[in-house]
Image (tube, rainbow, N blue to C red):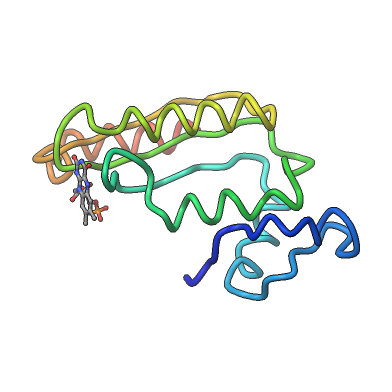
Length: 130
Ligand SMILES: Cc1cc2nc3c(=O)[nH]c(=O)nc-3n(C[C@H](O)[C@H](O)[C@H](O)COP(=O)(O)O)c2cc1C
């Protein structure tokens, strides 16, 4: 999807009445976001952080904040090397504390784990438990 970062123009909080002035694929995400009871942030690690694409989508919920029914969130990350996802996890936890969601868990796979059957079964079990 093509989703631009927030412009910080405050249109949503003024004339826009909660709607963003930018028209892009965030319009496809927003209906599901608004209806969600849980948010799962999934991203590969790019330069020790979540991708710019996920970061842009997170910035764009500035116009809404927390969806009315959402109570919890989880994070799934993959990376080449172990221990490189801490920056993304800190951002995720800060976001949860800020908008008021319970952390249902973070699942992080690295390197060969990303194709390991046992590890993938663990991820499936984690996803089903959410
Ligand atoms: C631009 C870019 C930056 C990356 N930076 C990191 C990094 O900082 N640490 C790391 O362990 N892996 C890094 N990687 C590797 C990806 O995190 C890794 O290949 C990941 O498993 C890809 O997930 P995917 O198969 O779901 O796309 C980077 C890859 C790209 C393309």
